[in-house]
Image (cartoon, rainbow, N blue to C red; front, side, top):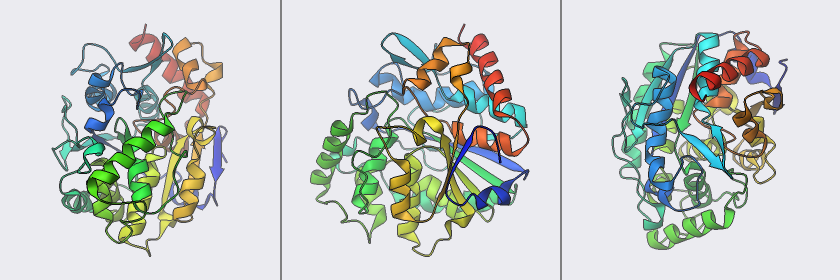
Length: 357
């Protein structure tokens, strides 16, 4: 149907959202898990990861971060990969899709108007008590989802949560899914063993084991999750219009929580949209995780960065970054509004040349 789009599933969801009025919501959150050395590349250093979500959304709105003197980039062997926020920004600008931000629990608040779902950031999941009041976060998000769906015909929900694949692994495992060595990473070398060790330490502190939280999904989030997961699940379940979950393997944890809360939930009105860098990542397997949960369409957009002249974008081809800030879903939304993937890549290059000279 679209050049640069790979479909895993029926593809029926596209007909529901084609050329529909669209609203893009980015949900931001942080946890102290991201400070663990080597667990994420979403920031120049572990201490700076708490600034990444705020800086990303500030870049989209203001063209530059205001909470940091420099724009977030992933540094790999001396080369810097531009934040995926530039992909989201380029896509939304070309398609003229409105952008709003929801705070699900970010330690650094962005300098822009945002909706507050939860103001408290998550702890290190090794404590076994990662998130305070996950059910309250979910219930407030449920109201937001109902409200937002009255304003649009298609809701796209992205996220920026450093170390989110580790917390996703924790929640998926606690709910009984086989996610070991299947969650993605923002680095070429996926630290699977580190992630698993961190999750297992959290399980030990919480007094739970794999699959123990099938009947108490909020316990899973509270012990080893992050605030984004119940927030996005609530928004999605509260929506009366189709929802695109714009993200990588973190969004499978959202789907797993939805399934645990409502085993009869109809996923025909919900899909995951990501980038080809996640879908074809040899160090992870988003499709194998998703198919354990339900029949969930997954859409992967290829921006063909091998054609890009900006050197930093080539780092995406080497396994750096892959996804974030809803980049894949933003590109899909733009394509549904008639914007070509070539036009998106062109605008991304323009933004990189201006923002990352």
